[in-house]
Image (spheres, each protein chain N blue to C red):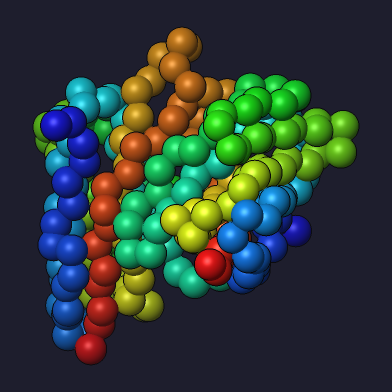
Length: 115
Length: 111
């Protein structure tokens, strides 16, 4: 079945540690996104990539880094510079092109808790 | 002012009720409007998609867009306990743009 796989589902981290969240898709989508979801704040865009080896900062990129070495993979690193990393992280992908709807397909999410 | 405003709820209704969920927006250039449903601890999934103004119906769900008022709505008829979820509106100017999301409205349908 096609879809987006995020791992791990739950992650605990000590302050000062970097962690990497995995996102893999087999939908052959060009564009991939990382969102952060906090109660009462909706989805906030961290980073996005529309093509391999290229990515752009979203609205809240500080303290995060990404890479896009393969079309199907878009890992997110939460660095120790991120002041408040405890959140639910969602990866998404979509087709690009003039004929598409722009619908985002989401993974199941990764919940990061900093102890 | 946020680009997209959505009442966070929670909205609690009895089974069988008609539910109305709404979003307002400030950017008149938005043309693509979506409603996502998100169950607890899961990723959002697309429920309804509308381009420009008008109504769209899919089973018990109806999406309405009123561009003159910058207002979109999602109606759920004959609501079921399985409809209990958070509903997020989202919109963009072009279909290739990144989506702007509302904060989501939490809906609870009790038996």
